[in-house]
Length: 475
Image 1 (tube, rainbow, N blue to C red):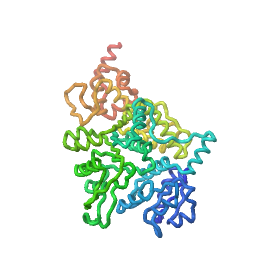
Image 2: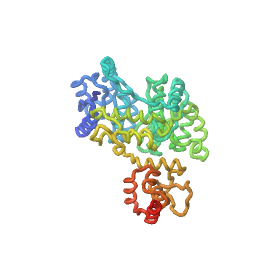
Image 3: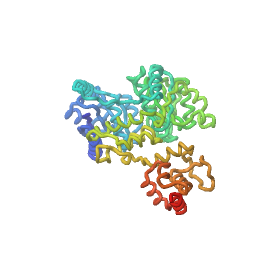
Image 4: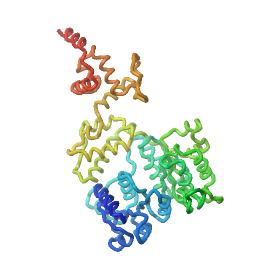
């Protein structure tokens, strides 16, 4: 079990964090100050230290040197978020803003422990290996041709200093790819700064990226380093770069071209040595053609491209990922060995997963938490197998998924955009006079009971003329 030390002077926050992490199968120790952490605990015995930035007596950043090889995650209020950049320059592995989302905190803890193994963790790993117990795997998983090609490209691209553009739908794991490129590069021992361009207000993005001098604007009471400067010597990952405002795009272009930045309010430029990785789920070429993204910036970042396939195109990887996630979640929650039912396997491998790997991960986590049995069924995953089958039939007949609310009317064109419910009603009404209930159910890929239930839900009575006609034909 991984051991974490939480250093926080506010009892309510410390207790809430302890309960959250204990629910995720971590062993938690507590301290109210740097002095208490140092005198009452041996810092080298932990896998991670989580500390508030502002503590009585001494700041949480004092623990960075005292902890040695143990990574330190700094917590800071939103008002002092910029000072967390200074913490990272001092050696903090990452920071998280308070109040934090519980999921974000758990994900950060998992990532940091996985990416920064301590001597204690390495010893445990060796003991587990010698005892024959399997160790958990981290990182990107995949054996389909598209993923094998991706791994090959990462291996070739990582050692260079060239700018990388990661393309893929939301939830496919673009940040994992960026982290993998960094960790396999010559800058692996340096800082990786990740910035979600869509999460920072337009009015703050330039000051966050480039920093500012004291007095540059109202409220600038002290000079602050920007995130680009904080990444000096390491890697800067700009996620969702397609959301970057045009003004910030112009400043970013100069940084790429000249290798230097100028803080807001400063007359002097500073040289920086930063490897740039960008990611987006949008078509930057189309945005550039429409004047919504600078073409010159697009050409500058479109040097080496890595494309992530959507989960629906990864074949057997989907089930392999689901089983690994199920094992991981079961271990985390202290559950016995769990498995997927045949219907769950059918649902997982036929569902389209519009949210990709992130949606699959959340579905598995929800199923493990809510299931009382050792076998996970499709209902626990939140997947309606009948609707999935209807959607599959629609795809086979060339009927597309809706992009807008359908206009029901007299059109009989099979390409009309219909929702699943509308398609069900239309198919039944159009074919119930010529098909039996069994034939209708088979065509829709559902049971007779499901067909009856959906008739009741949508208020579709069975056709008397059709039933009478079939009885007469069988007489």
